[in-house]
Image (tube, rainbow, N blue to C red; front, side):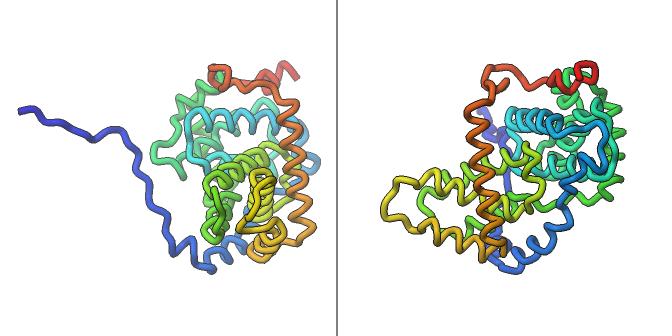
Length: 281
């Protein structure tokens, strides 16, 4: 008699808690807490001497490619970028240390959000072995200390869950996926550092809704009704929400028209961008 074992390497995830998603007190706590995790949007001129905005775009784009190829949970990337910006807001960093910092931030975020976190060895490979495991571990302690071990940061994804549990939209999964794409795009662009996570989440839902339902008739929600609902939910000023959405759509258009082919799409693993090597600056 042969025994058949059907247990595979499946990853089990917890079900969404309807109480946490439906209780308005949770949303209020998120709105109150988010201010504590917003980085200083002026750190390029106030704190950093070597790090420039385009360098941040390069390293965050690389971080996104790594997270996509490793199929990380969607919260890992924005959380790791939050760590990176908060660290850069208080610690002067050399440009040849920026990718090491990005790898450390992904390392920490994956430990917090992933069932099987990214390994130190794998992250070193993604940097073309320009960093060592020992450097990664040493900087992990450094980053944890500077962030005061406060890693449960509020990101736009936290509000995305709260918003969609309160909305009855057709094709809600498609709209949510597009909204998540807008959020990832915002994380790679320093222009969105000035916006709170709740504002980015609300604007991403508006942008996704507008793009996907532009030609549909008999919609459950009109654009005006959706904007009004999101303003009431997140308590963001109408002009502020509109400016974030306009910037989001503008940045998306620029990326669609000008972005080169992704390394992942070409079948190659994300590797160290040459612009992050100190010798090439």
